[in-house]
Amino acid sequence: LRRGHCGLRRDIPQAEGIASDDRDTLWIVSEPNLFYRFTRMAAS
Image (cartoon, rainbow, N blue to C red):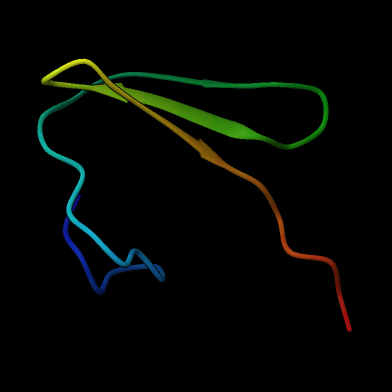
């Protein structure tokens, strides 16, 4: 996952796991032991 795509500010190196929850939160685990959380922005 590269910086600049879909609003990413930084690269996500070697994504290894992905999950979502009932609140539309997206969780990604990548090497080296990095954990990311993505949430929807509120509509203005």
